[in-house]
Every structure is written in C-alpha cells, then in structure tokens.
Image (cartoon, rainbow, N blue to C red; front, top):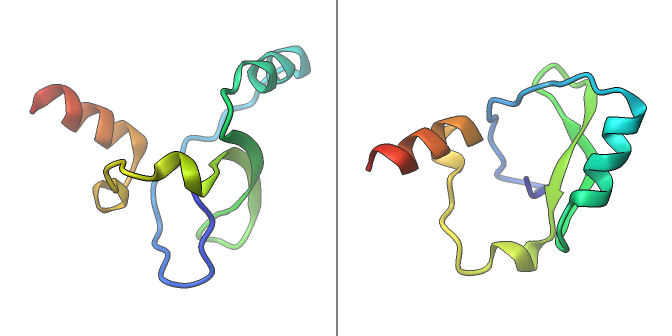
Length: 79
C-alpha cells in the first residue's frame, strides 16, 4: 500500500496476529522498498501493515480497482 493524502479508496485487508518472533522474521525478510507502517482502516482505527515506497511502484500495474491483494493474485492466475 501507498499512503495518499487525497483520492484514496478502501481496499480489503487481512489482519493477522503474529507471535513477536514471527513478526521480527517478517521484518527481516522484507525487501528494499517495503516496510511495516500504520494503515488506517475504514472504521478509523489503525493497524500495522506492509507499505511500499513510491519508487517501487513506478511502471507497475495499479490494482486498487480490484479491491484487494487476494483478488489481484486470483485475477492474475486466471487471466
């Protein structure tokens, strides 16, 4: 996800509960350009999520209209 000040839309997210050791392993495995940061949910609450730096998305397909990462990966595999 990339945080935007205006023009954003809601997308489905998955909320996982991880043991601290697993969370640390996730942090260490993130490639350059991805990071853990707070994302705001539709109800106004915030959770930790995977965020991307803008440069990482240059030249990549915009998938917001699909509504979720799962829908994108399902769409990708069925096309």
